[in-house]
Length: 235
Image (cartoon, rainbow, N blue to C red; front, side, top):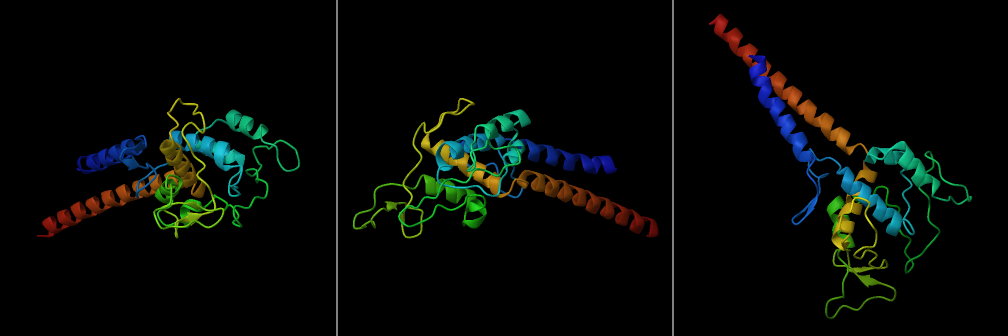
């Protein structure tokens, strides 16, 4: 009896895990990390790390991460060690696995200091989607809108004016997996990477939560069956 009722629950778990491995898509835009059962798309996050390193790291810090944390994206210890060894810290020494991500030199954009990106997804309403929309939201200002000196128009940013220019462009980076590095793809990938950076344990937490839901659903079914049997015997 238990096997008969447990099998459908197991099938639900298999289907859910299979769906979680689906590749992110741009049309329509979908982030694998979103939703109560979402998991980090490691391929997208690895590409997003390339975007961060090649474009964002010159201005934005990631104080919440050590280089060793990159193993959580599926990189091998040797690959991570190679990445760290190519980074020179402020003291001139190469980074190690235990080093925090390099802090860029002080920079001011129109009087604004570039924020640390460690928790940017958690700090902004809309999180992952906001990062994508912001990075793809640059353009000419609408008629009648006058930009402040040193500012740029962004349709997503509150007030529409931001001191950061549009930094992404087609082929701003070269992806190791051969993916086409369009501006939209770069924005989606770095948004997924920053989602992981804000919560490196997201996939594990959601997996544990799904197992817990299935487990308690199974216990509920067993309890109902036992209760019905007891009532039937007493009757």
